[in-house]
Length: 206
Image (cartoon, rainbow, N blue to C red; front, side, top):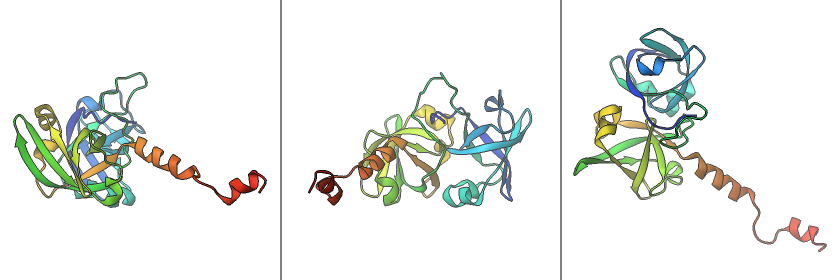
């Protein structure tokens, strides 16, 4: 489980053949092979590491659902270690299980902030609510506006400087993970029968 608060950006040293090698600093502390690492919001398992880099394997399913298959040597990525039990939850609960990719359609300045609009599928947009959370490339962000096909977030200077979002441009694909709470609420509502059913009548003796 992650929080969506990016700890640092790493650099891709090697990409291809279902494997990534990424340089890092702070996020390597206390990590070992078998531990999880969020890379652009994707929960991946570290297969090996040294003092300056780590390796992860990427399954075909991950390549299909995320933007990791587009990475090449020299690209920057957002990195976050798993949430430690008892640690501060500065963002929101992020699983690292990407729902879909979205496309940046608009970037504009608004004072000191930057408004970024993302186009997303209807299946994803059903869980996106105004003032709710969404993880974009592993970054916990608040939705400031939405319509049927897109949503908008406001990016402060600190986020632009300390994540890869500041380098993104119109047309780029990003990884999207919606708030898991919305999915649970939907499933609970679907599982609960409503109205008069044959089973209800039978239990009442009719």
